Length: 508
Image (tube, rainbow, N blue to C red):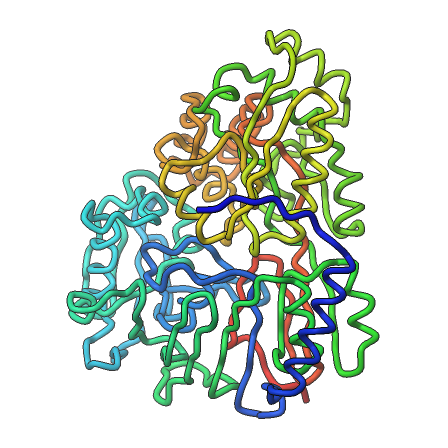
């Protein structure tokens, strides 16, 4: 893999936008000109269509949600509602019962009943699957098929967040999966069928004629992979794409002045950080060195410059006020370069401290610009950050494979909006935590072991305080969800990053 640094250039973006718009105007028909078709522009590739291996909400999980059913789902109003499940309830502290819609079948005739649901959970928990999502469901001790339309989840301890967590669990056809590769193929009971998938280019979907839920507004959907922000904007301006995301905040006002276009932003649940590999030298031993990183960076100034104020500085934690479990007692590390130098000196650091800074491109807003500015500020306190830029999909495989560099620019979020899920990313049993702290793990375990709201909040206070002090991240700020779309479509902006064609309708 070739690493390279690529400084941003406003003139380059403008030229690219102009050239792209001119070319597509000559050869492209507008997706929005066809009432039955919709084209969405995504900033990064879909890495897997297998629900057991998918973790990125805006791309992988959003696409999977069009193809497969889940027991419950979270709508644009941020409320949970049934999908395959008609209802659910806690039977006791450790048991949840879900009643399923009867008669749902996969296109090949297999029944999507309680037995199929159990098979999917057994698959995820099997070591043979090597599911990236296994940790999400570790609290589930066993599953009981009560009848074809009722299933019960028995947990080892109270798990109040289970219904919300199940909004991220999608259901494959057991027999079909035995003879197909679900990473590249799909056959589900969602609102759309997979027509084709071209890696790095596009995914084409067709509305399912016999879908059991509300009929989607669009018969044909294309998900275009357009990594360059300027190219995504140009595609919308040229009427080749109806809806696109991750556009520079500075372009929102300009796009709103364009005829037939709308643009905006909403504060998201995703917190940007420099994730630190606390298991790799030289950032592995002394928390003071990692604290120095946090003092060395002026988060507010960077957020104002890059995001034009459309962001909130992290209060020394991953969890934002949108989440259950936010710790109101914590405050952001202030910008204090002198304090950073003092901490480094006290830790025995002399001369320049060399560290790697990995920057995945095509996933996070203005990632290259952020890395360059942060790298410059770190250099002012004696930290030499060597920036390595790479395509997001390649970085994600490196990260999942236990090969994280010293630091990486990344965004952390959890669609359940519960601290349990977000903080579990740093539980030492998570292979991508790159952080081991027994007291932190214990606090999370205690929070999961009770349904008492106040007791859970107290444990999350302990866990977030430990993270703030141990600094496994350079805490930055929330990433705004930015978008632009044709006025020919209606779409409700949401801060949890789900991008579903089934949530888009033609404007009236």
